[in-house]
Length: 467
Ligand code: ADP
Ligand code: ASP
Ligand code: MG
Image 1 (cartoon, rainbow, N blue to C red):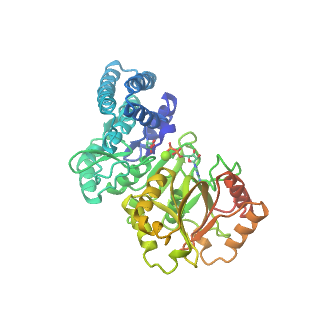
Image 2 (cartoon, protein in one colour):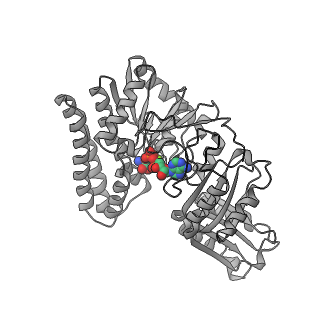
Image 3 (cartoon, rainbow, N blue to C red):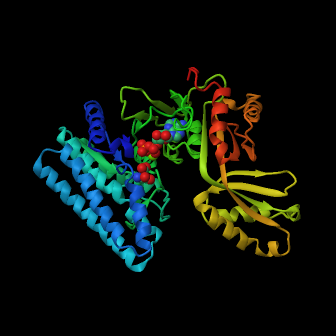
């Protein structure tokens, strides 16, 4: 069971989540993965950037706020004084580690990816002991564990990849005896460590990924991701108020939604469970009586083909082109080896058949470095006007229409673009992979909501659709 930031956001939320664990533990062996209390990771990262500019106070001020926040939750959840005292000491240790990291950063005015990982991991490390103590207070034996001990990753800081076999071995040898002894391990989400023990993070929102990495490593029967919505919805409820909960969805559909920005799941979440076909549930920790969404290999097909919509913002459209690139064979190859070297994930690619222009989309966070690297790669070609432009448009978004049953169903694209046309939404670029499980298109950022509402209505996603 993984609990996201809002599900451990304060004492009341932690109590609700701990009750879910304690009830389920009567019937099952449970392993818990926790995120940081909501907002904490953002604040840690913000303060790190202040420290990088030489600000020595930001880290100190944040430590005080975090101490207060975690102590308050602890005081409300744990009555036993000696249990509380030992968790307080652990919190102090972690905070003083944090203080040294902030001081070092401010002194050097340098924030390496490795230091940033160490700083951003503090939220999960602070949360796990509190949640674990809350369980123990309820009479179930919680035990906080830092995932550095369990998840072995490569050394790509800020988005590390787990190594399956060593993780499996460590997870079994550490966790199996604890479960046998009746403990409930409470593991920090979001973090891992290299084989040498250097802390890494799995990327923002990565606790979902931690849960499936560990669930797969431990051969779990099921993985439940507890969050603040009823499950996977037909669209982001913050943008489409008519969005409905989907009862069952396939790995593939859920992965497409996650990849195209449905924040409810980290994009890599489903990878570890594919080989063993472990079901993943998305459920609401604020309404545990609701069933939520079940994500399985088969999913559950529905008539119309379209299952859900998603939008990804904070992206930029980069275009490389000019009449001179026609017939130059390596422009495409060089463009994407440049993005690969930067590990800038390319979210969508579109190329017109005249080859005049290759356009693709990356996260805004990667856009500036990508543009610079491309201008460097094509410096000669720009000088000789073989390539006449490398440009970027940051005011765009991708909208994706997702559904496994769209494959072979004629008319989905037609209906999509017809309804957008009727709403006056201009389409900048279009892509559909041959898997036909999604149609994605690029619109200006200010028309995302209109595009979502129009397609949601067109495909009747707000109505009971038998899913
Ligand atoms: P947690 O802190 O539990 O990891 P997140 O904030 O990361 O939670 O993810 C949950 C949020 O994802 C929801 O509050 C919702 O606004 C957003 N979201 C976006 N698209 C969807 C969707 N299709 N279904 C459900 N939630 C979605
Ligand atoms: N706390 C981390 C983040 O905010 C990981 C997570 O919440 O999944 O990115
Ligand atoms: Mg999340």
